[in-house]
Picture 1 (cartoon, rainbow, N blue to C red):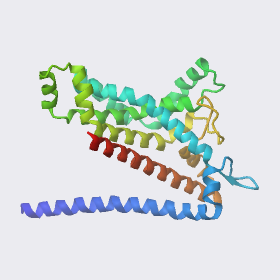
Picture 2 (picture 1 turned 135 degrees about the vertical axis):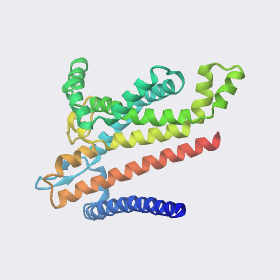
Picture 3 (picture 1 turned 30 degrees about the vertical axis):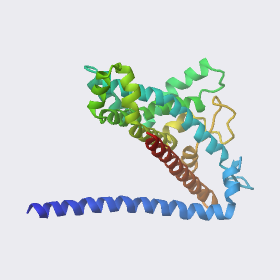
Picture 4 (picture 1 turned 60 degrees about the horizontal axis):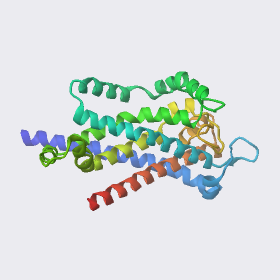
Length: 287
């Protein structure tokens, strides 16, 4: 009877895993089938390097370079802002927090559960006026606002995974380092964090994926201007906001161009994952 239950469980897990793979392959097939068809007709170079996005004009232009640049700037700045805070919070929760651990852990989990549109509304009401009043920006809806907002949104992902990785480091490393005369700070900096760097890298990868794929919150504060950004205080449009803004009324070649935009976004996320995995593998080999 026990073997039968275990066999049934194995089959259920196998079907679940196969279904996940099937759904991913189905999504890839749909996106690439329509995207490659558009790119073949319009030209990959014209699509990637084009600076004009005028899908409804008589002589339609489908250049997504401004959206690519906007996406990378917003994602890069948000990651640079979130990384030191996320790592510091993770270290504090893993090695310093005592009575404050449970409230702080609950707060981090609550941040992860808040819908992105709520974050976007908060940024519209609070961040946008602050950026407008305390910077030289003509409008508070710009890439800096979107980057600050995204840095807050990706913190829970970064903190939870990094903290778990730090807690998985064998305690004997910690006690052994202290026994050899190292201070607590030296032990954390030179022993615990380097040992947990694989998990920390994973948290960064997932955070970047969350940032580059975020739509609604960014849509509310980034300005949504399909032109080449002139600075972090200028409005821009990301790849995701470009899709959500126009998919509702797009048709024909315009709709194919938006699906091709999703294909480019998928490729960039895959490329980022591959690059970070290569960096993580090489760092582990050196260690």
